[in-house]
Amino acid sequence: FVLFLCIVLGPSCIRINQSAIRPRHQQEIAIQKDHKSIYDKVRSHLNEHYFVPMTATILKQYSNQLLHDLNLSYFSPLSYNDQTLALKQAKKVVSIQRKIKKHHLILRVTDKGYNFYIGTEKEFDKKAQNFFQDTNAFIELKENPFNKIQDNVIHLLNQIRAKKFIFQWQYNKMMPNRIKCQLAHLYFNPKTHKDGIPVRPIENTINAPTTNISNYLDE
Image 1 (cartoon, one colour):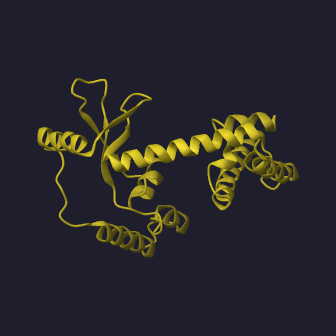
Image 2 (cartoon, rainbow, N blue to C red):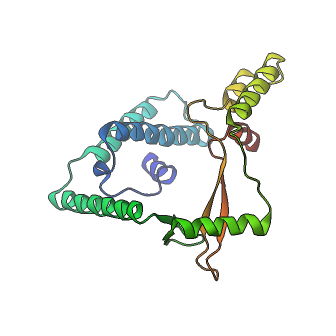
C-alpha cells in the first residue's frame, strides 16, 4: 500500500540516464528534494486518512528505504550502451549550442505544442516589438525596480508581524527568499499554429518578491 502511495504521490516520470545529466553534488541536492517531497506527501496522506502517527516507526523505515532507492536510481553505474548513448546526446547538444551562438539564433518551445521554433534573433525581436505596438499592454522600464519592490515587501511583512496581525509561521511562509528572488519578467513563445507565427507573452513571476504571499493566499 505504501508503495502504491509512493507511485501515486511521487514523480510522474523517471529520467533516462540520470547519472549522466548532472554533476554528483547537484544530483545529491535533487535526491534530497525528491525525498522530502515524496516522504512529506506520503506521511501527510497516511496521517490524515489512516491516522498513522507522524513519528511511526514504519514511516522512518519507509524514509530510509526511499532514500536508498533514490540513490540507487541516480547513482547506479550505466551500462556501456547507455554510456555511449549519453555521450552521443551530450555531443549533439553541444553542437546545437555552438550553431545557435554562431548564427545568432533563437530556440524556443512553441505555444500549444511539443515542438521547437528556430529563428534569428532579429526576426524574433521584431515579433516581440510588433506585439508591443499592437497591444500597448506593456511599457519598458528605464531602471530596475527589483530592490525597491523587495525592500517594500519585507518592510510590510515586518510591520504586520510587529503588530501581531499574522503569526510567525505565516510571516516565514510569506517572506521572499533573498537568494532565489528575482524581478518578474516577460518572455515570448512563438505561436507556430498561427499565420505569420506571432508570439504569446508569458509573465514569469515564479521567483518574484510577492510570489510567496500570493501562494499563501491561494492555499
